[in-house]
Image (cartoon, rainbow, N blue to C red; front, top):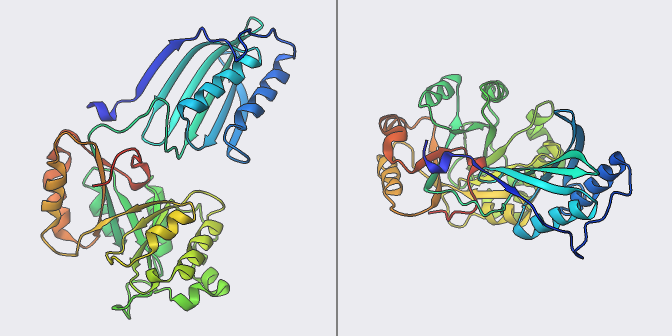
Length: 358
């Protein structure tokens, strides 16, 4: 296991005092103090960004706070200060970091009793201490999955992959369920109105239908009785991706259908005039751009090799390939993880945002 895959784990003893210099003596009951402290901790991330539960850890109270957002050095200083101001003497801190998730555990004492506070932050653009991934990350997006055989074939490669199930096929629902059953993330490859495509693999969503709320809801009805999706990308898009109102309508409907769960957007449209990426960012989606490999072209291997050959750099890249691209499949099967020691295959959703995309 190389350094980029290792979990960063540390422990430190605290001798901090709260702002003002003197640590106050406990005034409230333990349950009251935990409840009030949890509210103050949640307030660091704003309304509805956090949830807290209180359980037991080895017989001691454990307040587990889960938040969506970053945990910067400034937030950490305020977090610790809130604990100290509420008479929780901080004895030890441990943490585990991933590219965009962090778990921090604080062992404290309140009037002689041990109390744990656990903080879990997700969708983080900043983690304390700063955690850029060392080396190179590559996310392979296999789009236009048309059959169960496509899914099984690509999964035999043994590297993390992100699969885009084509929306609008008769078996789209079954494929989404199969992806979920394998423990993979469910992504949609959505065929959108295109200047060069009249008959698509799947059902083309037109601009007019996207701007009609009833027709758009009908088009996305496959999501009505489902666990939700992790991400979405355009399969065809040249005309649709120039129309910002249609994109905003689609993105908003996806968010509503997903019951508030985060959706990652991947701009897999090769046209330079596409507004897919910028519209997603403006609407506060986590959005990435993909380098799209033309189907059945022999340039996937050179693209992969050139990226792997970057020396002394921390970098990320997304490459989108068609599920029917046998050339890309054979290349990846041949190279696999042995391409470079510092090249790590990840899913699109776990890409580090602290490294430049190249």
